[in-house]
Image (cartoon, rainbow, N blue to C red; front, top):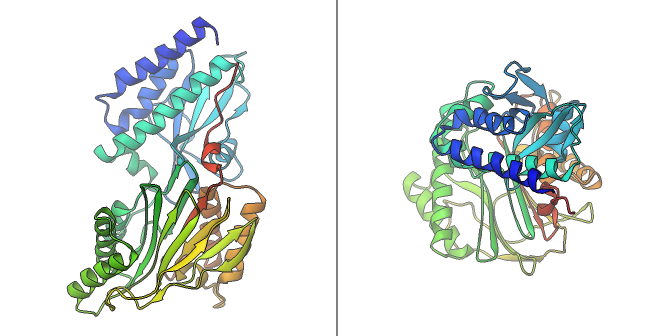
Length: 405
């Protein structure tokens, strides 16, 4: 990249950072457009909706009159979102919009005629712009509702509002690990939840399914999440964490409410997976593109009914293995004839995704849409999946490496 190209890239970045400090979340698309305009580009930001079916145009871009939504299936923008690969379409360049490995949507860049999108200076400029835009969305969204409201396509229940406010971002990546979760129905969920974290080289993973399909069930799930996070932050092990959840749920609901779940700890340096299963469907192990086994150990009584006792099971993962945690709302989803979606279909979808080398979040998006379609769009129970990909190097593929030369 020559000096003039580097100076222009720096000017775009400086303009963005100067402009974004006092911008509320709803003004971020306009900040991106103004920064892109310094290099003669137009820019529009599209955010994915909660059901991950469409990309919704955020107001404030240039030119100002785009389509309101673009379907993910069958569009160039949708392919960029699915595959996380920039694509050109004439003088338009579509770029993934990410924070780390979490997918927010895409940016549409309208380039001057004759611009070469593979030119190193152009690549460097759009990479920096998209990187900073993604980070700013993650940082600014908690301070306002504008972008959150844009992603909504229908009304959300109070129970769902509470639970979604407690969930972590759907996707996380660090060296050697990608974790991705999904939960449906995203507008009316009640009692499923998932969580993850990485502390001192250990990934902490959990999926929970509380009793009830109303606000009370959501409260049980919320207390379970709080007890789980409190235990993790206090440095407690799996036994002690289960005991803490037993105490929190059991005392508050007098042993009348309970939670099934899987709690796991994955050592990133070695692939050692330790887990406890409290009355929950056994996780699946995907190896070399095939579901090779159910992780059936670590059984104990339901959370909220026990005393923390039980066994901790152990499994040693191999590089590129997937550990798949899920709730029974996936396998027990029924079609109009009463047929279950079932474990076989779940395994088939995971294996097809592995064959196609799909990123974990795209695997879960397609899986959940298939589960919803199986029930004609109406779930009888909440459905949740959490996938951990260990030591795969996939975390490095969520954004192309900088162009050399």
